[in-house]
Image 1 (spheres, rainbow, N blue to C red):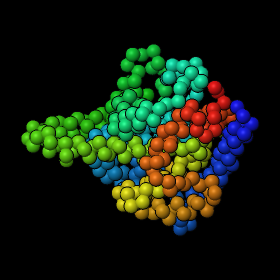
Image 2 (image 1 turned 30 degrees about the vertical axis):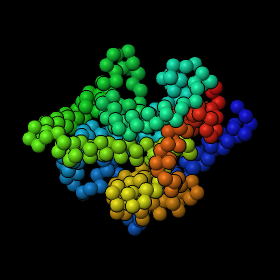
Image 3 (image 1 turned 90 degrees about the vertical axis):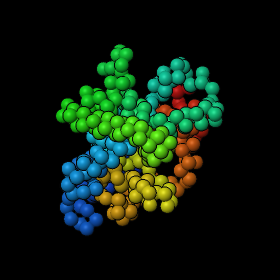
Image 4 (image 1 turned 135 degrees about the vertical axis):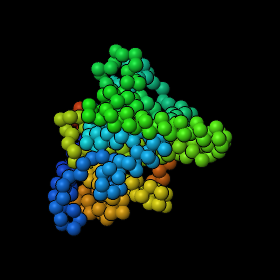
Amino acid sequence: MSTTAATTSVENATSATNRAQKQQKVTANLYAKDLNGKEFKAPDFTIAQAFSDYGWVNDFVGWVLHSYCGNPYFSWKFSHKKHHQHTGHIDKDMVFVPPRTSEWKEKRGVMSLSEVTADSPISSIITLIIQQTVGFQTYLCIDATGQRHPELEDKWYKQFYASHFNPAAPIFDKGDFWYIVLSDIGIMTVGYSVYQWIQHFGWFNCMVNWFIPYLLVNHWIVFLTYLQHTDITLPHYEDNEWNFARGAGATIDREFGFVGWFFFHDIIETHVLHHYVSRIPFYNARKATEAIKKFIGDDYRYSDENMFVTLWKSLRSCEFVEGDNGVLMYRNHNGLGVPPTDK
């Protein structure tokens, strides 16, 4: 590894550490007072419970709408809760968890990075298409991009046992069991309704009015989540270096213009705030984001680059993470950015 590369790597880690110290101050201030100076309690991390003041209303509306979109509501609610609790924790986060260098090489079946030829653009395009069309489904069905489950490593059914549709999956707590069953009932009800839809109105009608929107919903979920948590500048942390403030700060706001504020209610542009205090409703998120910028300063992560360009860059640049000080940064074998130390 060259001196320049080593210096850059150290600077990245140091910057992440300094940023974390500021983030701790931000969290302390946000949890102490709201924007009007009134005290409030830390949020209970659910999907986001900011729609209504009544939890049962949030859950009923969420269960109906999520089920219609093919998403098991309570299953995702509980895994999303853990994602918020452990954002940026390399061993506890729930989605788009990057592999360490050794895990990435194991998946590729190689002993060293030098054995892997640079991926061609065609290969990256194929990966991108798969991710954006069936990425969310594979996450729900086999916990793709989630945590490894060592207790299942010797089981032939290990991938499917960690499914969001399995009430006994290791990603859930024991008390979640019947809520997961209720989620499954919602999905089965929608599945039967879609079948009846096709029988009565034909497959083309169903495709135009349900299946294509279903694919688009799944595309946007993966697209947004991936880019909110994947960037060459964002760290991940091992247990000895992680805390909630650091994890919440390991996110990035991006600009999506009219699409972002009109269709997605600023969740793209205010995602850093969302991880500090998830119950602030979208119509106050811009104001609250401006407030936390004063605390974070230059360490606030933001990009106004075209998000489709960023998607391609991130796919090529953010393949695995490495670091020997508990702060792990993205690296790749494509010769982009800081080269990995493990050749």
